[in-house]
Length: 125
Image 1 (spheres, rainbow, N blue to C red):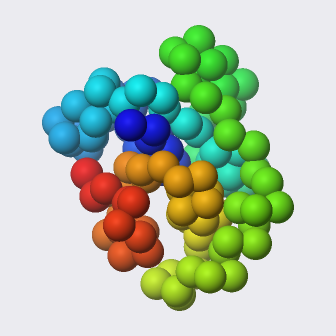
Image 2: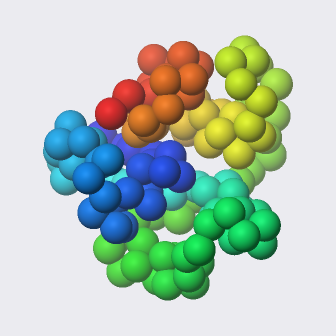
């Protein structure tokens, strides 16, 4: 199974946060490939710049690559797919991450119930 991690799932995985459910851990362990969208790094970079998140983005990227996670660039196909999504919420990063999962297609691990409404590919963990 190919799995795309939502931003908070990635952060919880990296920090072994207790918010990361055992279901999420199992799905990540069993995944054939784990993908991280460039949109995730973009979202984190914006939050770091605004002072809402304190992380070392280069270190996170290095760890992801060393762990075998696959970096997934944003493509025009992903961007165009956003237009077909319903408006469950307005966060442009979340919408782009959902559109990426739908376009590829791959499972999306998220703890956000609003994201899970977009597609049956989303797994609420």
